[in-house]
Length: 99
Image (cartoon, rainbow, N blue to C red; front, top):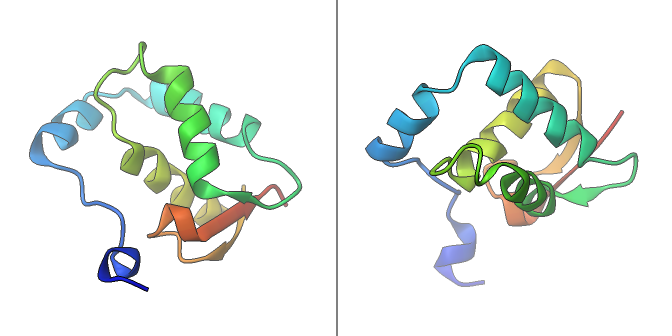
């Protein structure tokens, strides 16, 4: 493995944090709902779910980075809405599914 694969995803840049900080509670709920809808009862790569969700919202929420969607997935895992395996700090090397 090369060193790039060993590094965690992120962090967000200052500019990205500003964009994400402007999201409202209802927008966050909308994003979380889409993440859950893009998930399955079968294991899926976090990167796949992030990519699908990012594509859905790229025009509605321009500038919101993939790492933000990955962080939302981690919150959903911590709340019990999703199950995970692997290191969620590395979206290409972790998987999620609906419980």
